[in-house]
Amino acid sequence: MKKQINPNVKAHLIRGVFYLLLLLAASAVPLAQQTPAQSCGRPGWLAGPDMPTTGVRMVGVYFPANGKFYAIGGRSADGVGNDFAHPFEYSPGGSWAIKSATYPDNQVSDMACGIRTDAGTPYIYCVSGSAGGQTMATARVFRYNPVTDIIENIAAPWPGDSDGITLPGGFAVFNNRLYILGGFRINTAMTNQIWEFDPTSNLWVQRISLPVARGYIPTVTYLGFIFTAGGSDWNGSTLVDTNDSFRYDPVTNSITSYPNIPRITGETRALKFADGFVAGCAPSIWVIGGGRTPPNPSNEVDVTCGGTWAIGPPFVTPRRNFPVDTDIGQVNFGTHHIWLAGGYASDGVTPLSSMEIYCYPVPTPLDSATPTPTVTPTLTASSTPTLTPPPSPTATATHTPSPTATATFSPTLTATSTPTATATPATPSPTASAALRPTPAPRMRPTPPARP
Image (cartoon, rainbow, N blue to C red):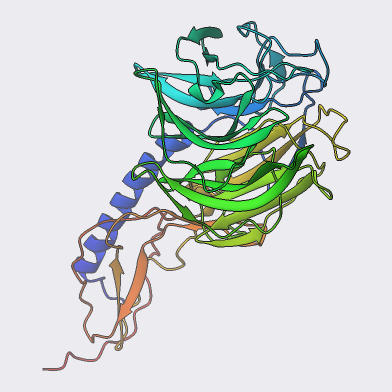
């Protein structure tokens, strides 16, 4: 003889399905905002289209407002007369284009660039630079709006180049301000100054100094701090790579040590990226290749978070002084990337045009939700299944070294030891899961009478 499901249990299940559908509908909104990009089935490096020409000493900038990657400044080769006059634009999943906007001068190699917002509009701000074959540097500041394709000068020269020969070292953006850490006094020495630029007031402020003088420092903003990893020193005749690592706090204007990057490197970038399978956390810091002291230039990727370092997935062609950036610095849904292109080849001389793309698919709730095998509880003498949503909606993306990254968003069916079929009330705070499928008229086992 078939029994009816306890009305309380049935109501609880229906309510859970209702909240689940609402959450799935809401999750479709951010998914629709993801940047169109080259798809990939598993994390890894892929070959991208070559740049229109070889390019070295460019700065890579991903611009979220239009979802495109830019290679700013630089030159096609060393020597006089090879400086670029226009920005390069890469459309993810598409091709390269040379834009119409024109740089204010030819001193566009080895600039410091970052995105800042002024009056609600994002721009790519670029500071300093030098021309190919020259030993002078400029203190000039300009900004580029990729959406309107317009470049304009900013009347706020960088004080760090007061001697006319200093190029910016590492650079990062924190709280809408550009920070320049260290610098290279061309063929003379390194500096240890830290400068802060506010795009709203167009003012520069000198902050605390680095413990050591370094140039070309891989630098990144990460979890409220600015981290450095390596950088270049000057031995009197040439640049040499180092592995000094520090953590700078822009709020307290203080510097603390950080475990040194395991290898020496410089003349590259550090990035914050969402893929955390290497260091066991996401996002983490990725230091991408670079360096010139043999065996550098390198294709090694070093990943860190929480004070530990690990080896990340190497790209194919070793290189230094190349544009590189990422479209994501936090765990999110969709496919995300690191783009790199150009730079000097492993001989440290030959300019490259080749592009490589690190592709990282972050599972979406619809892709990774795991169906719950039973949604209509079978009442027995020993257990009453109770649908108990977690305390708050939590989307947890978990990536392991296996090819499939799985994010699980499913309500939990919890068996509780009670002899009666009674639903436990719970505050509905559902997480996304696969659609629950009711099972028609389950066969019920006899339930012993409730104990007094």
